Length: 195
Image 1 (cartoon, one colour):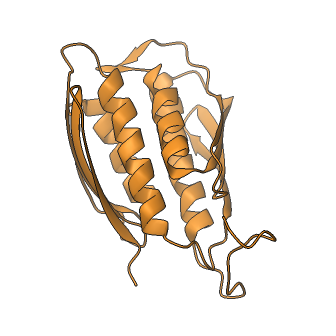
Image 2: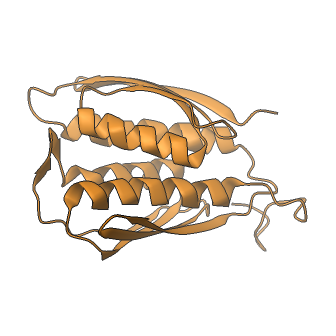
């Protein structure tokens, strides 16, 4: 059975529709109205081998906050729904990803419990039309909605574009590893019996 889900969220601030196929080819069609954010989500899809369709419209005349946060909520919800019962998944995944001067670690646990530890210091307040403070907002919203444990840490780097891109790609690789199937495990990977 395909691990696929579609989620729609409409508020007074945003209107977002997203679908995800976890076992995809990294194909994507993404439009949030924020160019740099689209670039990051495209890299997330490609490097996690997730097929993602996402269309978002938001109150960008205010700023990008609501659009970025709500996109994280919708993608996190879709991811959790697509995972289903979580049987046979590896559960844990990690990646240390280099990108030019940047080196970023991402580690995840598909635990059924939300947690975010985020240490991604950047020197630039903006990259293109994207507020760098919103990186944390996206990861928090995704982790909370997907009910996963996420650690993201900058090991090295000074260029904000490279640091953020390394974080999104490392997160994708870590998730891809965590959701991959382990044939040795016929049930849920927890002594509790549930995730």
